Image 1 (cartoon, helix red, strand yellow):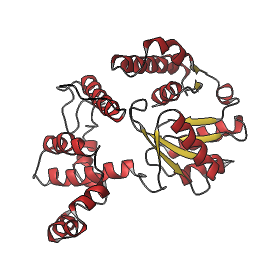
Image 2: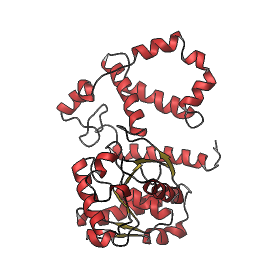
Image 3: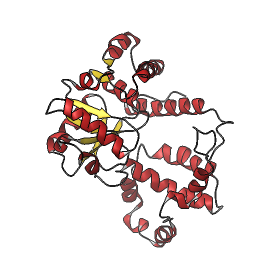
Image 4: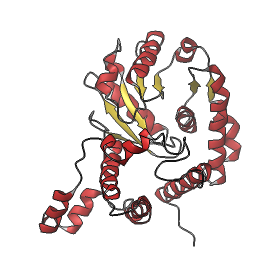
Length: 304
């Protein structure tokens, strides 16, 4: 995520210093940023003549103090662990200018909890970039209870200036993006565990069905189109009453997979067999599909 965020900011003209807890990982991060830029070029979304200038805006720094020296905006992309994030951000703000905005790209951890460990919590605001950060345009902006208006405003302005679409979200579990993602997964897991459908069928419904319509029509727009009377009628009531309400993922087949060490792509097996499917090819196809949407949003035409 760090490399993708750095590239996204650099593409928007920002100067970025990339720091890592392991200095030896920094060259690989630069390589990932360069590969991301090259992919954009192959898709016609950037100019190869801009490569050197764009990548030159990203430098690496092994010393945290030098990395945040004079910085106006600091964002961490560490593991989803509150203690790790709090430690990194507290160390960063102690070394940074007093008015620097600190941020986290957490997808679900509470902004209020993270900022509770900071000396200047009013300067903190979550900026949740979705993976892959340099391709997905949406970024969730989540102020904590102690965040100032300025923290959210500066974060939103920076995201807008670097080509993102920021959306202000409440500091609730999962914010909006992950919350909806977990809602869909919980329902599908329930159906799969009850032997009613396969993971393949569920993923096809999302990718071939909803994915083709969602860019043009959101949930509330669809409700108005269908009619409030229809979406509150007997059929809708039957569906709502039948939806899953499992308390936690460990109470489903997710828990069984975890217990067996089947953790998805990184272990070779999850809901799918990733020794039979190529993870790199899957991610490349994912990026191509995201690029198609980006092009359409920018006014491109579909060529058959």
